[in-house]
Length: 290
Image (cartoon, rainbow, N blue to C red; front, side, top):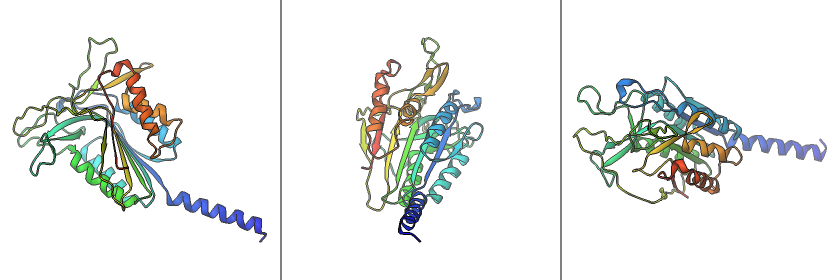
């Protein structure tokens, strides 16, 4: 075989090996319709799912979506389990949630300074504790999410990367403000989910960036959150369609830039949100291990 052809063949083999070695997979959960009995208002997570999926496909990710009608807690857990089980060394993994959020009373051993966990609200969750009826089993706590995230980080190893986006909030009133010119919709509730009837009082923390534990054998993780724990997360109206503000501006940036550990793209999202007058009282937060 001529040397030039031999070298070209080797380069092709190495390119294929590299593509196989670094897979890209994404899980997108966009919930819009909450049943009346849940106590949560409808939002527009389906619109987020559409633009996020298109953006990730362009970025080369294989996408798994949890869309309308299937946003139950077990379905979300099953999909997180699938991602955690099937992630491989060097993978880039992207997980996106657009849904309601709610603070949930922490239980011993306490791991939160204010004794409130943060939770994602599945469609079969309920806004209030009712003994023997609904006791919080379909709220997906941050403690549970962290277990999945750590498993993924361990599987992807030090050359992998996990990016998580949470377009929800844990304060607000889960309502549409009919008196606002933009008819704003808020994701989240100020009512804490408490077995003991405790009133939720968010801890005020104005930090915009938090450090996550780094381990030499784990992949790095980056988590973007739509707002601080005590703030409302507003949807925005763009050309007659509502989107989560973080999802919209994230896609605006990532339609033109790659998802990398260089956080310039994160800071650009934050800057765009700060420049939007509809989001004057909302500050994006990010956490990272690097």
